[in-house]
Length: 297
Image (cartoon, rainbow, N blue to C red; front, side):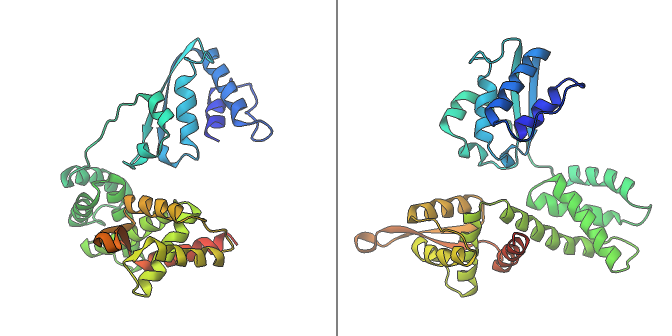
């Protein structure tokens, strides 16, 4: 999909778009290389939220190697990938990492003062004069700075806070509206993070949420696997067949912040193992999974 989009961006104005069907990914890369050479020069591809690409490994392997493989001769290619997921590079295959020879640039989170400046500019355009209290802007900035230092999050706090005020018929956006907005925004972000996971990862989260609601956590991976298989069956899906596959998903979910992992060592008799528990409200997982299931029926 992304390669086709890149091709269409580079095609001459009079040319027809690259077909969505009938030609494979290899054909799309061939056409992309043709267009790069036709235009020539240096091409820098900037890909935002690169961790959301369906097959980032293929793109990040093929594009940087195009010239070395003699697929292009008149063009130079570079890639800038932007992501908030610090674990993204760990998911790339070893051959991609060798190909990229990448340089990582990390940007520090905004502090409260910087976020206030951003929010004031947004508020001037979004609100009628006097509708949004300056203290509400400071509150949104402070809450975002305490969490991720993310400008998008701070803007969401202010936007949702104004929606709360509007629903309640209040004429001014105040600190209390921002506080309530934080809960709504965080809940929405968690739901989106759950939706971003693979089907089996979602089933495992649903299994752990079920155990949490039954006060059966922390639990070992084998106990999670038993409930997970029941959840997958209930959704008409074929569950993963090995405990190792479940353990790999549990490790990923722990790394992404969904789970808390406890290392247990029972010595020679019991051995060493991990126990897991949920690091978010199980009701959010259950509600999100219910919505997803309803949408896929």
